Image (cartoon, rainbow, N blue to C red; front, side):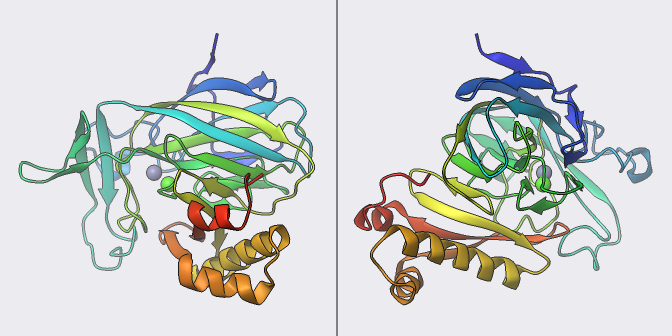
Length: 301
Ligand code: CA
Ligand code: ZN
């Protein structure tokens, strides 16, 4: 039977100091329940800014100890299923998101989620694009609050992290100490207002240890291709580092030189923006499957 990890096992920072909430064998499939990124504190559009405890933000459910994972390994996370609740929440306001310097009032929008659509108001709806905002492992050093992304994953707010996608993370500690939270019913690249359609959810993942390969930043793979995801103080730094990670990966695994791979990426790859509103900004370098296949790479890791 698939094990269920209740959302009551939540943490506000990814860190090696937490006692594991669950231990699983490599290859196990588990179901993880999550709160929304506000710990479900916002129950109506009238909720006052000051009635929200802003210290209770971005809970991630975990950590899960994966037996056999050791520092230097890779943990593979297959996202098998994302099941959403029926209502999501968006917020924006002063000092939040790209328009934070212009906005004068804090505002909340409750968004009903039905079938394949989210209802924004009486006239506007848009397709659901369920994805996971916060997902990762215990970082190399100290603790990183779940609102911040990094080499360990965390708040990457990357739209490619959907049902059917596979993620790869570097392992820094025994057991990897995996956790996830901050599911969005929909989010656009950039997450410009500071939130997606924040929603509680239930996620089915399979966790597998990969040995003998090294990785220094998260990778996401889907049917269309794969991307290195990098978070840095500026979007420029993040994008450049993501390109470099991809170039070196492809040059090592093909008979092309670094300059040839760079040309190939310049013609057939895409630098993409994940988010521009978190404490570090996140970008990714995406390469389509068609190119990977022609390079003779049959498996990402
Ligand atoms: Ca987020
Ligand atoms: Zn979120």
